[in-house]
Length: 216
Ligand SMILES: Cc1cc2nc3c(=O)[nH]c(=O)nc-3n(C[C@H](O)[C@H](O)[C@H](O)COP(=O)(O)OP(=O)(O)OC[C@H]3O[C@@H](n4cnc5c(N)ncnc54)[C@H](O)[C@@H]3O)c2cc1C
View 1 (cartoon, rainbow, N blue to C red):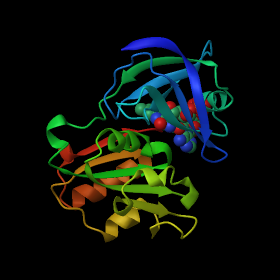
View 2 (cartoon, rainbow, N blue to C red; view 1 turned 90 degrees about the vertical axis):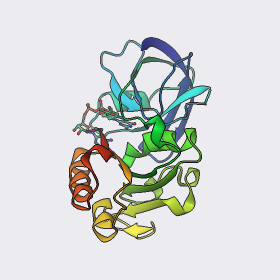
View 3 (tube, rainbow, N blue to C red; view 1 turned 180 degrees about the vertical axis):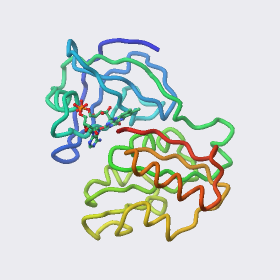
């Protein structure tokens, strides 16, 4: 674990609220699925952000949604290329088990920016056998859709019908059984995680095969 200052290399806005911050890695070693704690340099508070980039990239990327009333995400959204960021970490246990990577089928369920660790998982391990359910309001919030295997990415939209499924991820799961030997990772808001965990357990998935990361 380390704490260091790192220069911002790139900022890519995906829509008016959501952006990818790329910054110097400075030798940071992490396991895909972990998060870092970030703040603009000399800012009084910091927040956790899951790593979006791969274990193999020379930089670190995070996917951030600017919360309208939020303190740190708003400050981060106003930073410029070349500014210094305070980085702490890596932290967290929302990681893949080495012995499962090559021989198990995975279900990844995300809401909003909760897709971030799954982007890192699938970029780091290109041969993963997975299905990704992404719950968003509008199809254009299916960030970097082209980075996932086309037939494995189900975009569940609640405010338009241009995704792969019109409805919430919970509705999709109520209509589609998941094989009971699937390893499930859930990431995003706590309400989704609680509901999806209950649904998966009802479908016969063992609790130890349901792993979650709560963002808020
Ligand atoms: C382990 C972990 C990993 C995280 N990874 C990410 C990530 O990859 N990307 C990311 O954008 N956020 C992530 N978060 C959330 C992030 O740490 C902050 O909580 C978020 O950026 C809001 O901080 P803020 O200072 O702007 O808001 P604050 O001033 O702290 O206000 C918090 C308010 O914002 C709400 N809120 C927090 N996050 C969201 C959100 N995404 N959408 C809508 N409302 C929200 C809270 O419920 C609360 O009402 C993660 C949180 C944890 C615990």
